[in-house]
Length: 335
Image (tube, rainbow, N blue to C red):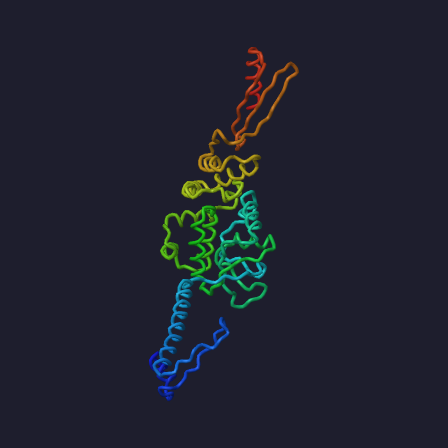
């Protein structure tokens, strides 16, 4: 049906009333009185147009209010036990422990939940879970641990859109580690989400070289990863050196990695990389120490490096004439 113009509606409202007709007016709820009734056709039309003007003004205000929300995604409070992590989730288990994680959880607990909403998508065939995380895995996990409802935006999106939104959101966060990013890229390629590494880099808008380095960290042998206190300690700039060393002498690098695993405390991450590459122990790497004492205040210490193949011997309160005897002992030891 064609919508009537204001003029047409006004004419229809006053039609048939003649010049002396009265037009019923609405009851005034404020004064409790009926307003004056216009007694002429022009008066009735003026009253009608005034009411129309109020409606138009109200509609304009409503439209302006709706316009301010244009593009906004409503949020819901969801039961976190009904929300599953994405299969491309790039958070290593070490991200959910330690002082930083405890502080993060305390902040969410103090606020009564996550102030910044996570994003989820509905699961097409819901079972134990009804939603899957798009981004915000740490916020979801914190609410899950704390028994709080999680504030979430809900949107139905494709697998590739989910992956790209997750990657974009996580790359903007300073706490994401190269190894975690590499794990995510590796899983996406294994699942066939992208036909090649270059296609992935182009779709994500990231440097193909950095993507390749992060991916290589996720592919490091288990023993090499185990040499570090946590794989999250591995920096992106070390990827090339580690992989070059593995290509040249894989068995030697693995042997060095196993030697580091036996040390306590561990060397610094940078010292570990240097040792894996060259077999040389930096000055700040821990050494195995053996201490010996004598009956007359003598003392000595033998320091062995990570490989156990190099040693430094230091002695105190030893008479100079005993050095020849020490030399003989060492020669006998070598024999």
